[in-house]
Amino acid sequence: MSQILSIVVFVGAYILIATERVHRVAAALGGAALMLALGLTNGETAFHSLDAGVDWNVVFLLLGMMIIVGVIKQTGLFEYLAIAAAKRAKGKPFAVMVLFVIITAVASAALDNVTTVLLIAPVTFLVCDRLNLNPIPFLIAEVLASNIGGAATLIGDPPNIIIASRAGLSFNDFLIHMAPFAIFMMAVFVLVCRWLFRSAFKYDEKRVAEVMALNERDAIRDSKLLWQSMIVLALVMVGFVLHSALHVEPSVVALLGAGVLVMISKVTTEEAIADVEWETLVFFMGLFIMVGALVKTGVIGEVSKALADAVGGQPLLAVMALLGISAVLSAIVDNIPYVATMSPIVADLVAAQGGGPQAESLWWSLALGADLGGNATAVGASANVVMLGLAARNGTPISFWKFTRYGIIVAALSIALAAPYLWLRYFVLA
Image (tube, rainbow, N blue to C red; front, side, top):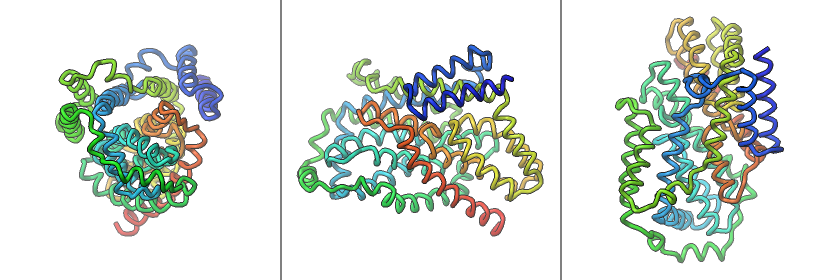
């Protein structure tokens, strides 16, 4: 009975989010409140469980990086980058988009996709404003690229960190197995962007001429604060890369960086937190509690075990089924709790098949399915939720279905190409 109730509450909240009949934050909080009120989860689980509660690492990573971005915004750096990027692309909209999606993908692999979205969005708003372009297609393209690029490395996407921890995989393992496909997929994605966002490439000669005449160096308003911000940001990035060796969570690194930057700069606390997306953070909390209730009542576990039973002893079938199911479920629920729940099941499948390249390919199937499937809907990946929050704050809201109309095409194409990649690499050429 508890499983049926949790499904009903989750589906109801999801429909409200998708149809936008009520604000997504209200829908997520209402769903979380119902899960708690009906006893489908409890305070201890919702706020303290690592597997079925709010992922505070994600919440505080976002909070720390939002504060850092808020301080950097005071320097004029984003205006500088916007003008420089527009001039480098000679004001041509498609060239601007290609430049931004490549930068986003590379940065997402080196940092993580959520941090990259927080950094690239302000520049995008400014470029589009200067060139009289609609920012929505550019924002959607960037967040899709961030999820593709983030799949390439251990730190690029939060689900990869969970998989690496459970499977004992290293940073280099992800580079060897995931990066080749991510690079190939990005090349395909750039070509697809030309068709997918074709209505966005309107050339305004007058606005382009105005941008080309600007001197980007004039945009820097506080050079001292800029240097302070860049030093702290660089140290934070080093902390992200070395977090596993230092045994310090990325969220702690981000909060330390935010605290140090506010302390050493002349920026007031009010200015530093002015750009924090509180609605996005609260939405995440509600979503995590709802998904956690599905975990606690055994709904996600039942789905995972059914998969394990259906494909036992058939490595290729297991890999393909896991890829497809991971893509679908990661589109419906956030891919972080999904991967956290699925990892033990995959570990059992790998052990049952005796290890080796074919058995271990299950981990790469899970990673590709979760990372790329998260592109399908507005709530499939953390970066998607953050980007929608930033767009709404800027006065250019992106609806659930507007995002999904583009995201589901890219996700389906990615999974369609990932299937032959897994088959060729681990079964034909192994």
